[in-house]
Amino acid sequence: MGDGPRGIEVFEDHFQASTSGEDSMQTPTSSKYIGSNDSLRSISRSWTKRKLKGAASILNMLSLSKLPWMSGTDGRDKVVLTAAEVESLRSELAALEEREAHFKAQLEHIDQIVRAARLSGYLEMRMRWAILPGEPLPVDDSDVDDWLPRFFVLQGSCIFWYSSCTDLSPQDSTLLSDVVEVGTLPCLTRDNEDKRYCFYISTRYGLKYECSSISKIKVDSWLEALWSDCKL
Image 1 (cartoon, one colour):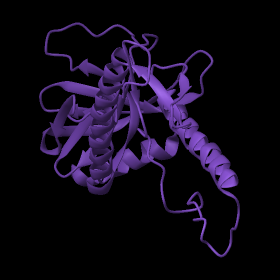
Image 2 (cartoon, rainbow, N blue to C red):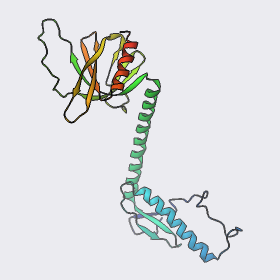
Image 3 (cartoon, rainbow, N blue to C red):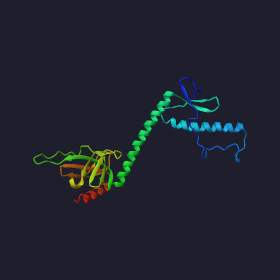
Image 4 (cartoon, helix red, strand yellow):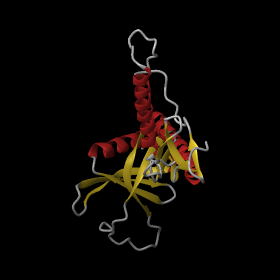
């Protein structure tokens, strides 16, 4: 450090070049290359600059839109960063590492679900309550668009649903032993959409889950699995 203007830190050789692979340099004594010192120096400088520009392209993915360059007293190219830019890069790298750890946990969770679940996938769902004795009949709400996408998982003795397949914990669940009825519902056709096939899951507590999908195969798979596992 110390070669740059005041208030700017110059990091020499901050990006070390790999000594293996296709970019590895031949030594002057190699039998495959014989040249003058000037030729070697010219190749070394261009090769180093190419490596630094490759590292610069990675840094440009962060907040720095342009990296300044300068030549040191030894004739080698250097990346010039202010102390504030270095601290900003450190903060962004720490944030990226945190995001990477979170995404990795999500992927591992999805992998565990897919491996352990008997059936899983997205369905649109809405909830309704059963009519209690003495209550009036419900109004026709077939035109009410309150369907929400949920990721359903049939695993073990429970049905879980998540707001998204990347969620680490379910939004709600129901024991298969609490399911008292599973059946089909009339198909729906909403504006500018394909026909949706529907079914419902009723529990002993009066809660009714209405589910739908544009895939008849998916709906049939869920009906078959629920009828079998709930022994209905």
